[in-house]
Image (cartoon, rainbow, N blue to C red; front, side, top):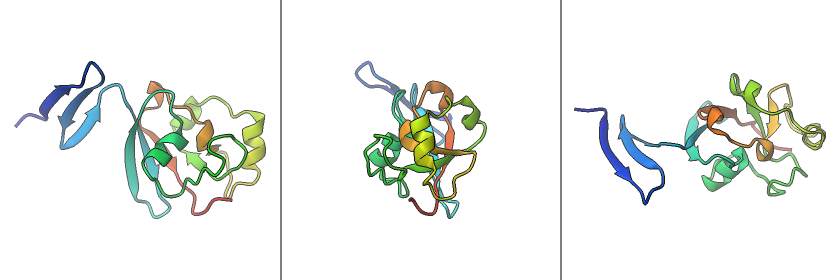
Length: 133
């Protein structure tokens, strides 16, 4: 049996391929969220989405996003794991100011609303804190 079971072209958009019993959207970015208990969930995203967008669109527990992405709270605090952390743009001062209030802040800390996804970030791993500020 072939690893590639089916290929479908969707109205000129992304090509969908069933591979190892999993749907992969070619041209999409995968974001993996790691919960405090170690469980994981992976969701597709488009280039230009933020990690917060992906979390909210897929009902990921742990990202509250009370300000809706305006960088005026820190309820979307997360930890970006290596090697993706080094691929991100440096946080701007507003984000750094908000992170002062984040629970468990460390060098991996980012606000999910400020992490814009690009194809180079496909596979990014995001660890979620036990609580939000």
